[in-house]
Image 1 (cartoon, helix red, strand yellow):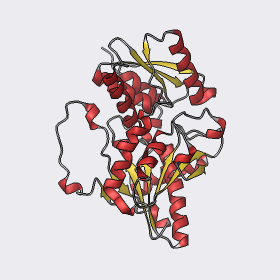
Image 2 (cartoon, rainbow, N blue to C red):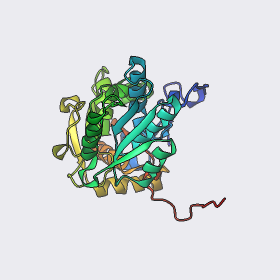
Image 3 (cartoon, rainbow, N blue to C red):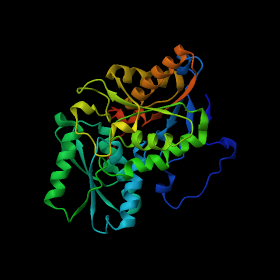
Length: 323
């Protein structure tokens, strides 16, 4: 397994003292998927480990940037509560950084998100409001907007689906880091669509590179899917930050394929990731196979959005304390 952490290599990367956990976001490593990648001879396949952000997911980038910018601009003023809709990972990030920055946080989540995500958010002192599970992330968006409309002076609503700081976090972070590590070798970038911040911001940065880099968005195959965190755009509210002209191709993945690839990554690569990450790698591998069949070679990069333990149900043998 090859790991890249910047052009200087792991041996020259220095640890540094931080003033806050917020500063720990980004600079995540890239791992070459050598075993999975054997299915595509002659093509390099890399996975950027966004699960190594302090909140355990790619959403740390957008959440921290949106919060810090809002504090700088006075939009997130003392006494205001941050509220947003989330399927889980952005909520964990808001909660973590809210605790670190002294900001109260309220989250609106579909009630069927994993218990682990609910419990992690609450552990930081966050209030959680549940929306109809049958309405998915769109229902959470609508409920968050309704709550804000009833008491606008109480809340700061960053609205991750519309906030340009979301893709900008990936333009300045994810995309720049991929180029720093792999440079001219990158030929393809693959990322799933949720808020669409990752694919939009990273693709914008990669498309500025002198060498052409093809950018591919990943969606679930149909509206009723089990790839938590990903959106099937034809049946969903399209995020304002999304623009289909910002990438070159859409690749649709079946739920079963995403889940099976997640399991394969655990067994073959020692990487325990969530199902949206499985969908990303499945799509990236299929694109790598296409390049291999054509004899073109290439270097395909995709995103490990979060860890697989985010999807666990509570363990049966949890220790109970009696005082």
